[in-house]
Length: 288
Image (tube, rainbow, N blue to C red; front, side, top):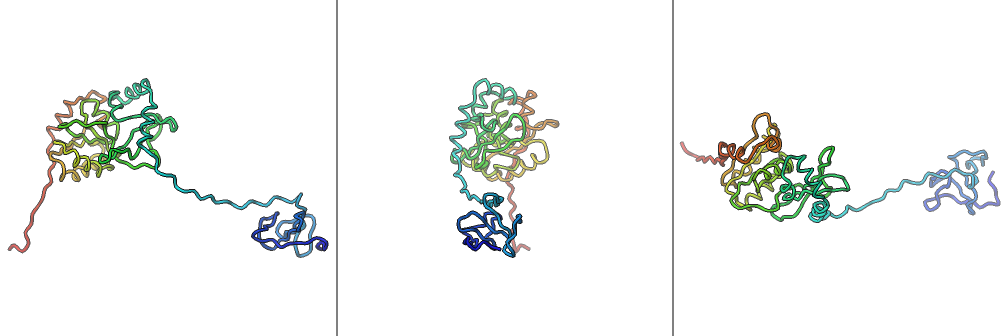
């Protein structure tokens, strides 16, 4: 039976059961010294009301799960972040990385390659050619797959300056652009992937109006297919457009440069490549 001298209060939203944590059926002593819970057994049963628990000995109720709502953080200032990464890299480390990639150190500097110690990984900024702002940062760890700084968007790997009247070389990836730059193509740019950055390349061509645009495709099927799609997009905007691939058996441009390819080797392929032109077919209706 219940202790009549004790005033019992029904549990509720503002007074959950201290034993089972529920909001109904249970009773709690007004002085919070005891509780009667029908769900959790004890050595003392109080009729149909449930089991008596002295709160000093009662099991602690399970705390309700809390859901914390957070707001999305603002887009980071990637231009400043890319500069911080560039300034963080030492000359010795940059020299070693240039040797690892098989490119010139001056090319790493031209593309503002840096070191993101918090990841840790090499950083390659991607820049919108129309605004000159860094929109994303590709990260390349010494071991493992490449990834990007969260909050960014893909655009192009661009050199810090362009030379007028030079061929615009469009490569797949940052390191291919570095390789082209290191053998004498100062206007080499890198796409973020074999299919990415097409709209940015078109914007760059319309902005700079180069006399010659050359797409350098990787030799695998996705690379060639992506290069053909880009050529179709550029045909309306480029005055002279060519598409080339490294020799058979060579994966990509950087691999070819690492085996000794020079600017003259690429120029021979460029001159031999057939110009890509936009073909328009006019039809007349109603002609018999």
